[in-house]
Amino acid sequence: MSRWPWLLGLALCGMADVLAQPRIGLEATPAWNGWTRPGRVTEVDIRLSAEVATRATLDVAAGRQVVRANIDLEPGRVVRLQVPIESAEGVAVSAVSPAASMKVAITSLGQCAPR
Image (cartoon, rainbow, N blue to C red; front, side, top):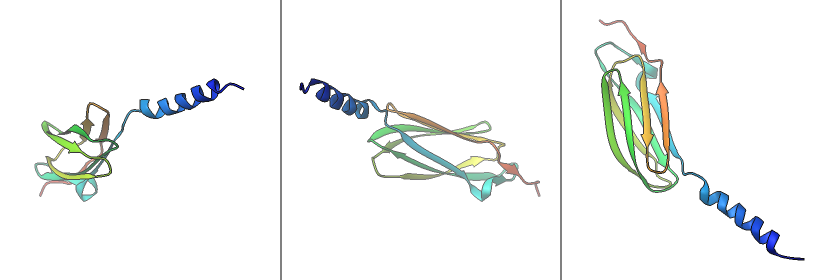
């Protein structure tokens, strides 16, 4: 019996792991359970992680405000940021690296009546 089919199958299985795209983990949670007041500043708690060491660009957009940061991610290490943003109806958070990209949208920030 020839070993070639077995070796070819083993090589193809190994290639699947090599070809898999590394992922970026991205979680975004608004402060105060998503409640804000018009004209006030609130925060978004962001957690970033990656399977491989990479440099990522984080964008947080709320209304007309955009916050951008370049972050070095390391495997097995979670980077946590609290980003202050202006009060808005929704927030878009995205992380992009040469290896992968991820987007999260927080679309339901509640707004309290101003005092």
